[in-house]
Length: 290
Length: 92
Image (cartoon, rainbow over all chains, first blue to last red; front, side, top):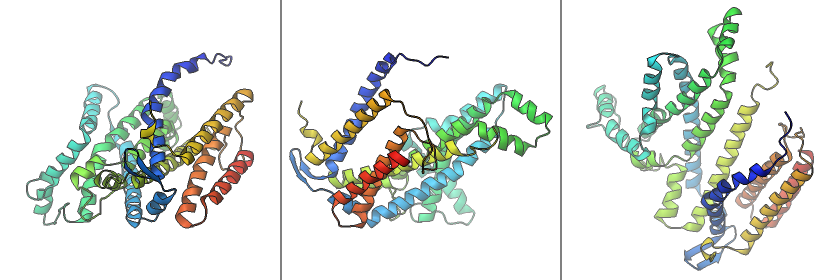
């Protein structure tokens, strides 16, 4: 096929560009402007250079929040991606049970995020919650409002319950797109179930898994509503993730300058990690036989 | 329309104009002579646009590291970034 020489189609992208400029680029530029100034009010501002960046980079509470955030996102990826693939592999391939299992799996995705937090507060309460009461009846003390470890366990359970379905749906779509011929060839060769998974299913799922890893990383790195509702960042600071800390500065104290500097550093971290994940997944297994 | 709400300053305006000029220049360069993906000292094959992105992201981190770890002038970090950018575009 000849190369497409007519570039007029680019003009069709113009409306999207205008919308993105309005909703993302101009606000981002404003954040950059805020990050180098001390904002007292409309029209009252002083240029302070890199002061907010220095303050933010030396803020030990921010360092703690960042490590917490990285641990959280790391655990999310380590649990949700393998679990999602495993569930997708066990799901039915044809018949009425396909629709049933898809809808059942997708249910948590339909619930608003702050409602999820509320559901899990009630579910895990030691006095009235089904989960909290059941655990405590077994003789284990469990209270996510008092123990940091319990708060983390609750948050991880909630996160896994809420978002593994997304990985399942993506992995399932990837699996369904593999032509039967691959499986037939594998059975003729007498390939084991593991070999089928390792050399057919996993490579064929690369595209959807790239999306799954990127989405789960970015979303878990930006998580706000669920821990805000469930633990409010506590007990102590044990579940104060980056976005919760950011909102404390920007809204709670109305320090727009430091909050803007913080936001930019936050943005750069997400940009770097997303790019690294993307490159890693795109290049994994390259050089192997196709 | 007033742009007062965006709280512009001279340094940030210079920064964004530079970025816009770089993007325009790269677009024109791409139209005149399209890039060929190649392999330099980076572990991945890159196009010119890829190297620009890596260079800009790297420059941002150079500045952050500079501000975070030293009290020296930010212009030294800017100089390092320009050198880094040129090395990356040529040999990356």
